[in-house]
Image 1 (spheres, helix red, strand yellow):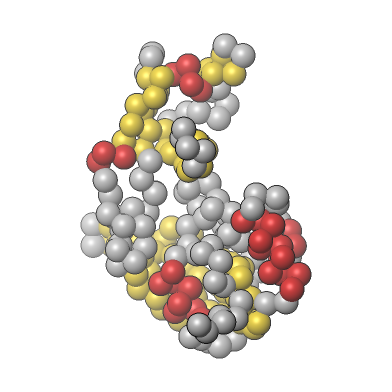
Image 2: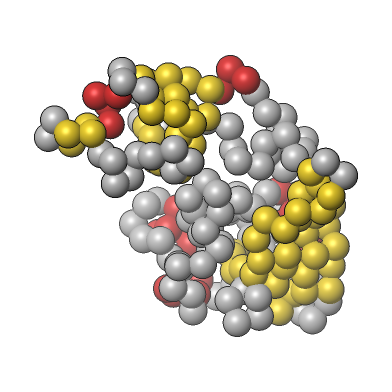
Length: 195
């Protein structure tokens, strides 16, 4: 079996979706605040990572992903209603974090963690959309590779720590995790983000 190298990849990009026949900018990673990750850890969309790994430093790219290669179709049955009391702290509803449009972290009975978007808050129930915010959409990434090289041991270990939940990992890549916050609440360094 081939031993795949872990690559350190930093890139700029502008992420677009097509909505009603128009190209809509979703987010941007700039040269000052690039998107950074280590390959082969399942941190980003597989098709996006595979295309980036074919490139070289300073090479520009346009990567088009169909919804099947991105976040899949939108499923109506992923809209759920939970008891309002599940969002209470010390008997008080958590208005600071739970409001219409908010992306909130959730956990199921098996301990799996995921994000949900608050659609509506009723007197007794909170309606949530558990689809990824980009589900059902084709994506286009336009950008440039800033750096692509074999990852060093420190970068690999930081990625492992981040994936095990020990740290976000953003700071150790020269990032500070206040950018690239995708609609699902993660950041561009692999903290549960979009790619």
